[in-house]
Amino acid sequence: MKIRRVLATAVALAVTTPAALLAVSPAYADAKPAAQTQDQRKNKPTIKELEEAAAEAQKAYDKAAKAEAAGRVELEKTLDDLSEVNGTHPLAVASAAAKQAATDAAAAKTAADQAVTDAKAALDALTEAATEEERTAAETALSEAEATATAAATAKTDADTAAAEAGEKLDDARIAAVRAYGVLQSAAEDALAVKAAADAALAKAIKEAEEAGEGEGEEGGDCEPELDLTAEVTGLPNKLVAGTSTDFSVRVTNGSDRHMDEVLTYISVYATDKSGLKDTDKFFRLQWSSKSAPKWQNADADDYIDGVGALKPGAHADLKLRLTLDKATPAGNGVAFIAADFFNEDGTCGGAPSLDMYEFDVKAAGSKPGKTEDAKPSKTTKPGNTGTTPQGSTSATPVTTGTNGSLAATGSSSATTSIALAGGAAVLLGAAAVFVVRRRKTDADA
Image (cartoon, rainbow, N blue to C red; front, top):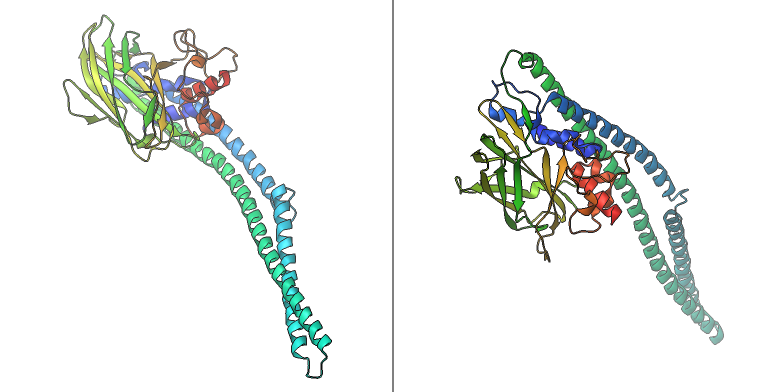
């Protein structure tokens, strides 16, 4: 699992502060030895960031484990209530009553069938000496017994059907209870996996730092936020349909007065199904091309695109992007994270202090998207920036972007989305932190 993915997931699990999202754009590392290559620098988060991610992962696991334990107790109680032996749930009572009615109907049919047999035997036993009245009475008794047996057979069929239907409803309720617990159980397992990965990443980073003497005696530059390095998306619609491809573009601009030797664009797509419980970005394929490299290329595993190259002060470069959704992509919600970093030969580096976030809806294959608009950007900012309230905090102040926009004013075209309704379950299963908080906040204020 890539470090960047681990850290982003750890933040999503906790939904308390976007601190670890800094690892997504690692241009904020405090110091990186000049001996490292640019590829190593761009992928390596700081120990502090890893510590923050590990702490958030621990909190998330603690919450998930507590929820799983409570869910297990609730499951046992629910299954007891749904027991046909002594359960008090209405479905259990109804099923038990239906089964008893079916048993009684079966007994009644057996008795009626025996009555028919006895009536036939009585009729057959009459001799030639029997009077007309005796023969008529025997025939009448047989006719009445046969009518009773027919009615009993019908009643038994109806009772059996009713018992089967009641049993199915009871089974469905039991299955639903087990599945509900399964969500919590899976969430705890996922949280534990993220915690283990975050702890392992931290331990590895500490070991590497100790072995390298933390770069003592080496000369190197510092990475710092660069407000004037921007990556602007145009043409990405706010609704995408499974089985289609969408072309859009990104313009990376060096608005600073410094020369940037190598500029990299970070683009990551995250999506879930309508329940918010299932990660679906595996169905997405991102490709890019540029003026210098016009052939379509797949974005690399680290979500970086190196098609920009160097940028002089005031210069810009355009990238063409193509996002393809497999036909099997479930309907749901998605978000694209965009940022840019730069690295210079002298070891200096930097990047935009926030990730631009573009939200979109995902429609099932064959759907009509209806009226679409370009997805609008919002930012997930570095903690401590003016105007930013840590997400998930107890403050009553609305969560804002790094400038002065309110999250409540943004969001996709869906007024009430399923990912927001999923609430804690979506968070536990790793939805992007800011994305989930934004959806939940938007729906609450709608």
